[in-house]
Length: 356
Image 1 (cartoon, helix red, strand yellow):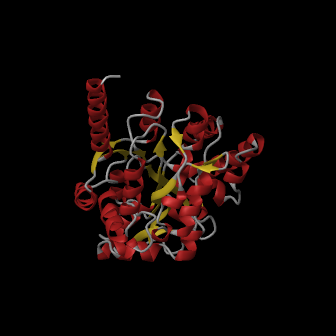
Image 2 (image 1 turned 60 degrees about the vertical axis):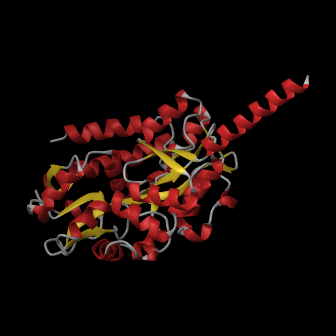
């Protein structure tokens, strides 16, 4: 190669290096609405010099996008923990998380361990806990002080005064209510069928008490605001919101069944090109003050330890009235659903919907 060609090659390499550096200064984030508020993105840019390009999505869309590109196009994604290992086994769209690069002191230890356990495949973890929430009971204690667990919603005294949904989470809730552990039976389809049949019958038994099956959070909130229902199987965020309007209403962790929980994680797409920026973002948003801003924006808390003390006073009070540390540690986190189970559940739910 002559001298001129050497200069050209060196210049080309320099340009490529600069381009790579510029690319690394943008973190391409595939996430849910409210998980990357504009103020948080601006603060991150101010502190690190890294831009964040936010694409809002959901579980199905995340898998679809990453599957179509073989794990390219994004540097950090936020699938729910029960949607990671199945997609990884089938499509290979993620790369393992290096837990040594996380500031573990910022995380609630039980949630960090839950996400690590539930996203591990072939000995490697693929997810890190971020935003979480639970299913339990939202109840107006001034009108239904004796409701403590899911089964209490079926007491005849509450005829036409409760709400729920004929959806998978409610079927799982009723399985725990009748004394079963559906998650432990995931590997035995015959046993699982027997469990959900019992749970489905419990949903049928409760139908006389159902004023309406809620379809969205606004519909549920209005049922409580108008006094049409006194209790419901629902997500904690609805209880927290109602509590700030009416101190008698709040989320209740079922005494025997405990709460069932979901965690939206951080996961690294296989062909992401800004891993360092991704780890910086994870550790940045897990700082309690930043996490509190995300909780306010999304309506759900994060796995950041201590952030519940830094949200608005009303939200903090509702959260602390609903959860003790012991109850948080006892949350039954949704594990990955094996193939075929949701079809089985759908048939049971269809029977419950058709029952008179």
